Image 1 (cartoon, rainbow, N blue to C red):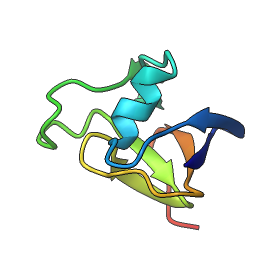
Image 2 (cartoon, helix red, strand yellow):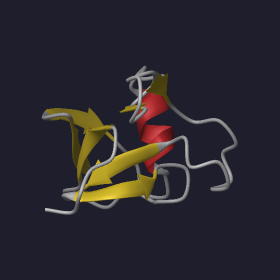
Image 3 (tube, rainbow, N blue to C red):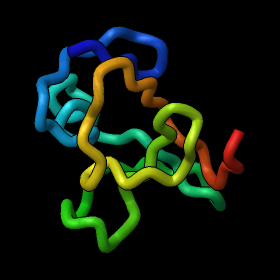
Length: 85
């Protein structure tokens, strides 16, 4: 399965969450806060805290812990609040 994270091809397997792929690639943060740009990654792992937000296929605010990767996904770091493109 092929996915891209911030423009780089990253290994992924069927059934992995986006957060699992990111952690497997050595990423501990993949979002910054709107106000002061502080790094965030996975916190609760169950979709409640919304700390693990990423942009997937140009859709912002995707919870990385809840979204399973699909072949060809384009995942990127989310910087603050973003509007859908």
